[in-house]
Length: 376
Image 1 (tube, one colour):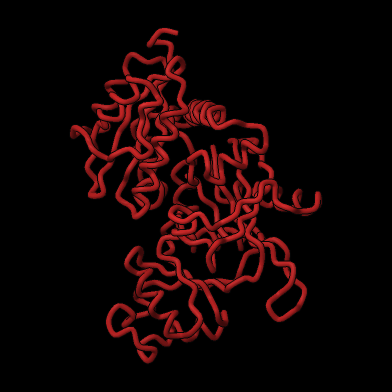
Image 2 (cartoon, one colour):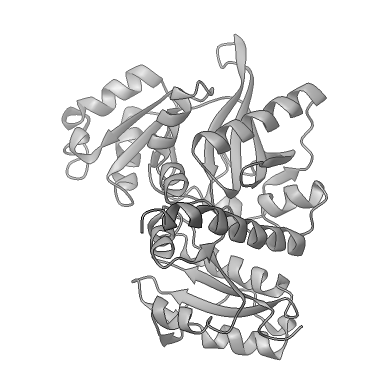
């Protein structure tokens, strides 16, 4: 296959969020899986401070052979711009951007909007689906409107909890005291706009809830408080555009008190059960609910939808069944991450999964182009 007939894939990694390192690891694995006979690859790095660079070191390693790539790419290279990168795609028949950017300034619709303005196809959800899914408070409000079961929650803005960044005393934070009364203890506190469990804490007292809110405000001006659900952690991967399909369900048994950042990326204490030990009826129910969530937030391409399965309430009462925790539109994507592993168990290998995502990106771009042309 000659270079002009290959699809040009622009891999963007790094980024400004606290999930920068996760992105750099993901990008190395994705590059290793891209078939050089099928794709021409350009790697673009975004530094922690927002500089865009051509990651020439990664491309040089790729040219020497995929096996020479490191386990983690460095977000470094020659200063560049989107315009320069797109100019390099001029000889390609088709161009697709693969944004491997987790968290704010990458997964939240910002990069997606820029790519829409540039009329470039890209993998994953569009601006609306990305933005709604990134903001956990907005996601929960959308799910509530759709009648999709989820844990009870309260979202507060920094202005609503004045004083939490200063003294942090309970007397200055009646709003948090009200939340504790409403949701009970323990409860989870997390920044509304963040992923990979960054900034998430389990609070067992009012003082701990205040401290956790203070920590969450370092990442976002909105803080989400959620009831602590006693249940199993179930995840489903979704793939597709207009006709999405759901993978088999998987279960995570955390190695720590809950499935936090260290459990996901640093330690190896968590256990992944694929497929999850569920009955046929339970499996069908959670897979259908994952598709409901995917459609409700206008996701496209890919997403991982996370659930709790509450068989029994903490007080011994009958549980509520599956409760949606959140949706991730750019989930972890190393070969050992849950999203690819779920698809592998469903019959789609890692490299084939990337191939399909690229084709889905092109289909969506072509479909949306007719709407863009009507405004001219």
